[in-house]
Amino acid sequence: MGFTQGVPPDIDPKKFNGLPLMERVRIAHTHWADHGFGTPKMINVIYLFKVLILQIGIGITLATLTSGFNPLDVGSWWNELIVYQKAILWTMLLEIMGLGGTWGPLCGRFKPMTGGVLYWTRVGGIRLPPWPDKVPGTRGDTRSLFDVLLYCVILANLLLAVVLPGVAARGMADQSVVNPSVVMPLVVLMVVMGLRDKVIFIASRGEQYYPAIVFFSFLPFVDIVVALKLLIVTVWIGAGISKLGKHFSHVIPPMISNTPWIVSKSVKRAHYRKYPEDLRPSRMASGVAHVLGTLVEVVAPLVLLFSTNIYVSIAAAVLMVCFHLFIFSTFPLAVPLEWNILFAFATIVLFLGFPNQDGFGVTDFSNPFLLALIVAGLVFFPILGNLRPDLVSFLPSMRQYAGNWATALWAFAPGAEAKLDEFIDRPAKTTPVQLESMYDPDVARMTLDLTLGWRSLHSNGRGLFSLLMHHLGEDLEKYDVREAEFASNTIIGFNFGDGHLHDHRLIAAIQKRVGYAPGEFVVVWMESQPIHKGTQQYKIIDAALGIIEEGYVNVADEVEARPHLPNGPIPRYTTWRAETGGQPTGGRRTAEHKANHHAADHHAADHKRMSEPTADEAVSS
Image (cartoon, rainbow, N blue to C red):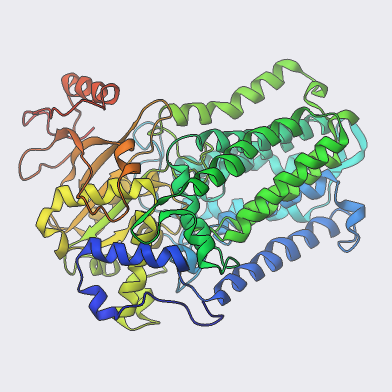
């Protein structure tokens, strides 16, 4: 891998593109095992400069100068709460503008590299309200002038909170904090924005930064510190628990393979069972996943939260800082670099700058009832999201990079993908068009298929490709298959691996604008695995017909299958299917169907029976 030149698969692009889909997937994931995305290292340097200039350079300069500190005198401000508060608000501003995670080529953004602000300041784009039928004033899927103005007000409010001087803290007059009256409007504005468009709320990393804003607005100094400790520990432990399943081991090998500083092929290949024949994770990869991942993320945060020994706290803090810096260094897809830097900084500030033994422990919180309420609020969505992932995004569920996501593949009939650019006005074209503006069309297509290789290395990829094979059969080779995370990114301006942002609601919004014929645009979509079940629910969506099939796959089948499915697709168990030929969706399933649907969840291992709906039942809820 060179500085300015990438490393493509060692095959003629035209020959590659003429191969069957799963053979292309095999070549793509075999190449990924040695080279990752194969991007030139110059791309990684661009990301580093983005972090150094935008987050650290400008962010810390603003946070310190506006708080009365010299940014070069680190010793004077490293443990000042107001600086940390402003670091959170500045990072949130970068995220909500699209300048943080999901930025640039590693997220399928080539021209332009930025989504976010370019999309959300345009009237007429697609927006995705979470509960349009339940929350008044949120119906529709078109961005209005109100949405644009609301978004701009939020940006201005975040910037003001960073640049305005602080005020004396409640309960500790010799300390300064961000002015609560400046932050408080965000408590309301972010909720309104989230109800109007869940994409922007998720993009802001609201599941982590919104609680912090609430703490800044209403709590006294010591309580803010303790509440922030509880927040970061909840994030860590939630992520650690989510990695206990079978998916996370499959995340480690492709992440290591994409790490720019690991140049040894033998190190990369050691994370796979038997390169190149079997690219399932090796025992070494499982050890990295569950010892350096799960164990560290659960044990070290508990030590930090309750330790009153400064040396133990320092050891645990160093471990968590190294943990985040390692993730940062691997440049994982979605590239949450700013998030990892902020959490490394938070570890030092909160647990070493405000030690438990100096009056900043959990027992020092002023009101035990309010403390219990905060804890309940912090764990509510992680618990609900792990039990009912269909109700909560994997981010508020605290399943960051656990491999257990809602995912999808998009399949376009010949010429159908181009209709997105013809009928949907937005700042960026489809990913193939972006790539073809820089490379030969055959090279562009081969490069894009590397994302399919990446997806196949994850356990849920085997389920998705199997669903495509089951549904399209011999016609599969006629379709252009796209990784939905990359494809949807060009439509809504953001994606962080959250399939809820490109489920049937987005497909319906696209269909409303494009008007595909049946069979032109087909989506296979899978929900995350609930923590207490061994299945993942799936939907097959035809843009013209809506949801045409539902069922589940067994996670055990996914993790046992090799990435390119040489033994054929894994089984899928269909619990509902529309009439032959499909039928427009829009009603509610009967109680009988719902009973069958829930029964399937509880009897996944031996359930092979398909319900036979009547014409009246063949509708989507």
